[in-house]
Length: 353
Image (cartoon, rainbow, N blue to C red; front, top):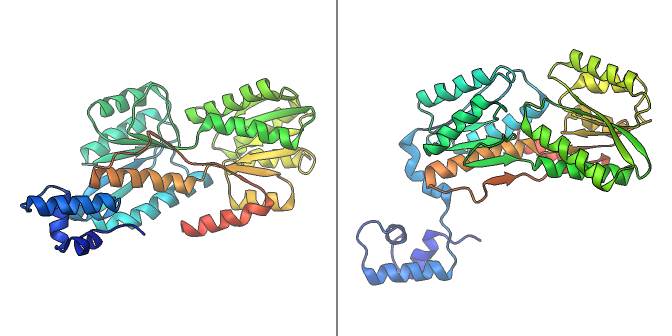
């Protein structure tokens, strides 16, 4: 059980106010009393509660802006936003507002305008899904140089400074995917990789991690081609259909399952369900149903709800308690979801509703 100021006050025989002043060197406290209080706190390994510290900031009207990279809804970012909303609800009584700002899909100029506008409107900090663009890179580096707090959410971009990044370790996820494929398909295999937009640099890192690890450790699985798909199901259906015409002997697929129905629809219509090994990234109810039916083997999820929640929580603690993130890169652990573990995903979804 965490040690409280009240407990220290009881042991020191003083009021909680005296303990607070002594621990934070505020106000007039007798030197011997202050020394005794600090010694008790040290012996009990007392750690200040950052949320309790934030109580003193209730009337500061702190504003956090969350700037996305897309405008159209997709299942993955619906879960990210569920995590953001959960944290927003928890901290609203501290006088903190959290605004979620969509951006026209992968439009760097519009995202740049959103950054400038939200700062002009008085935002104290920004959570951003940064578009991989020189425009965004330059502006975010300017903000970091001026000590303006920015947390990267889900995506990371090269040569750019930030307070903290919250997301998965993309390169490692690619390597994990390669090892998982080897376990499920130890013989020769022909793989097609369908990836969401490479304007998200994390997707590039994941694809490279997969490709390089396969070549180094599991060369019996040959990556035939990588296809970049968009946010449009009709377009993704056509991209996938063309890929299958070119590589009809494919027996392994990696798909961004929760991101594109069109991609999986083409694979299904061409008869690959229950015939080929299909692994997806991210989770949705539809992906869960396909895993239950055996059409898809498994999915690897990045825990998007936890990402959204954690990014806002980091800025809350930074702004209210001057608590710097313990880690610059706050990697959220990925999960491999198979039929037997789908119940865990349902529990997570309920937690963030």
